[in-house]
Image (cartoon, rainbow, N blue to C red; front, side):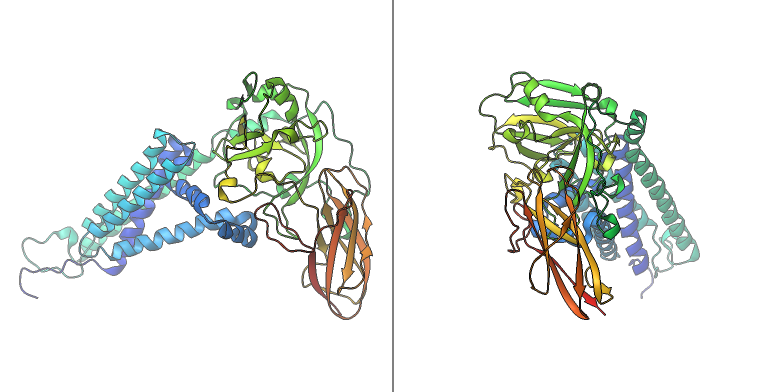
Length: 521
């Protein structure tokens, strides 16, 4: 190499590190500003929420089936890996010039800003965090690129000592990188603390127990067969299934809560949490089921919900002729549509719920207020973090309808085998099989079980609590040595026996008989 000529390429490791540090600095800065201004404007969360909205339904169904309630964590981790890989590549492309990396970070910033703009609940203030994140990423990348040592630099009088290949240049780059790392850790931690400390949990704890004026009847003895392998009749709150679109659980203190009832009504209502709490609360035992539940799936649970009958609120507002659905909206912008005639049924027991198993709703289950409607899948009747009820027609399309799910979806009669487990090895001879069945608002009349396509055998049913709840079953089977296929089917009180036809959950719930394979030896 001739005198006075320098090779300005940065080493590969340093180049990749520059890209990664710039990316995490951008995310941390955005997270910090979001914590100060608007939690959902964090670029990481905004992009994640937008990704959820744009993900094709088959992919969503696959994610729920494979990862269950951890699907959002998997999404966030996957996003993190992709961002870090792209950032490292951007750094490697910028060994000789910072321009490629700056362009990539600019694209990231534009994506974060676009995602924030796409969120239905974010206003102009929601753009501050992604813009600051982009500026922080650009500044960090440029600064570290300038500080990075070059492996080969000619020793001429114009050489920058900070960029020399000597130990001094490397030390300055390491110190700069450490400073960025420390700033990232501090900003990210403070941002997460601010986002997670919005006062909702403190508000929830301050409420104490939710005491209804009219309690649900006591659960009778024999309502479950938990000793034989079924779930307990009432699902503990931490075990209640959770399926929703919220990447971050909304933090809405009860003191700030307002529910607006409007649209095709005689008089608009605006109700605070205290307004609802001071009404005559009733407690209802209700089994809820998610429409995404596959045959034999886990997304079914039962709780004692406490709240105000929705029909009382609707009657107070005065429903105008022609109103077809109650279009409900969550604080995070999620929407659902419930038929008006269902919510006005006197014996439907649909609630604006404040409590769950005697305590205020857990944050992840809708605190401070949610809807609960027996007999309808939750995606159109059980909006969590509820802030708005609009009486309107079915011309107004909901979140899941836009994605191909049905406008109406009564829960289908289903049954599930809980014991034996799939592929379980059992002693040959007598064994107990047990499970659950549900047909909300109709009730379960009979459950039958068969082994290896043999004759159907009638199972013993648990004591029925009411038509809005699940029912447990158990049966003693005699299994010869070898592999066996066990199937179950339920018949509800209308006389309908669930079909064997297997269909996936979309558009209005799965059907088919649940079966498991086990081995007796």
